[in-house]
Image 1 (spheres, one colour):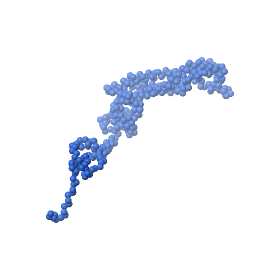
Image 2 (cartoon, rainbow, N blue to C red):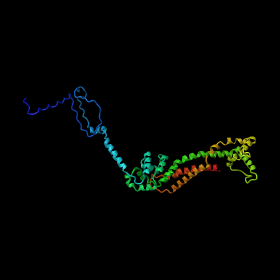
Image 3 (tube, rainbow, N blue to C red):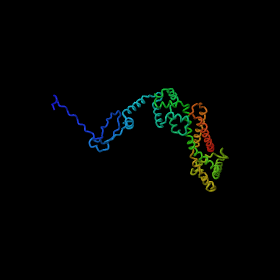
Image 4 (cartoon, one colour):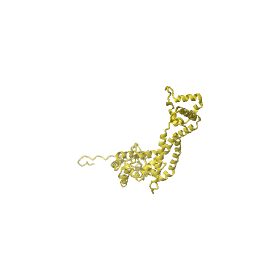
Length: 360
């Protein structure tokens, strides 16, 4: 062999190990999408003659058609950027009508119930018993913008997408006529049964106590004895020869003391009963409900009933003045006047006679 031309000799070509018989070199893929990795132990080319990989001839699918969509790695950086962009866009929506505190309270309310704005509106319009709750209406009444603010937000309905979420909610609710009157009426409806149930036990206790007092013979004799003693002691005064006395005087008997200040009219009355009218002493056994009735305030009862009656009258007036609507979702007048209002008046009317017994 002749010597090479001048200069350094050529480096020998690397020797590529021959693949075992029946095996082909595997294709090298250039991926545009990162894939999830498989943690396996790679075989060396030597020593694979007897493994079942030799001689394989399966026609393999195109990975892009199924493998990439299924097992392609996600791009957290891109999603994070999209999320940041959305958050940045959200932050730049400045309040146009509401003040910061009102908007914050409204945001907390909306975040708590997580209902679409249109769904909340339809629940109110339809008086949807299945979805209505005392908590929902109470929070709406508490956090709802004032009517002038709702009117201002209604003017911005064409700019809905540019508004902050609390103001978007205000735009949706601004289309509901007499919104606050509706909410107050619905809240009264939701709370009415509870209010009646809270009052009824007191009224029943008072009613039963009054019936027991009227029917008790021993208590009647006690009143007769007190009347006799009082007329005797009042002889010659303007209160003499009284045909009766206000029952509240019984609480004052112990305040009338003897001349030596050592005993009272109550003690004297008890001694007379012990000596001559022992049947009168049985009257406590005939008055089982008086103790519980004595804890009831007639003034509070009357105040509660008067308040409920005023709310019913206000609701009746609101329904009478309610504007006609073509909205098929609006069932406020139908549901509040036909079924509910009649029930309210019936329940309230049944309580008033009980109270009148107590008052007299």
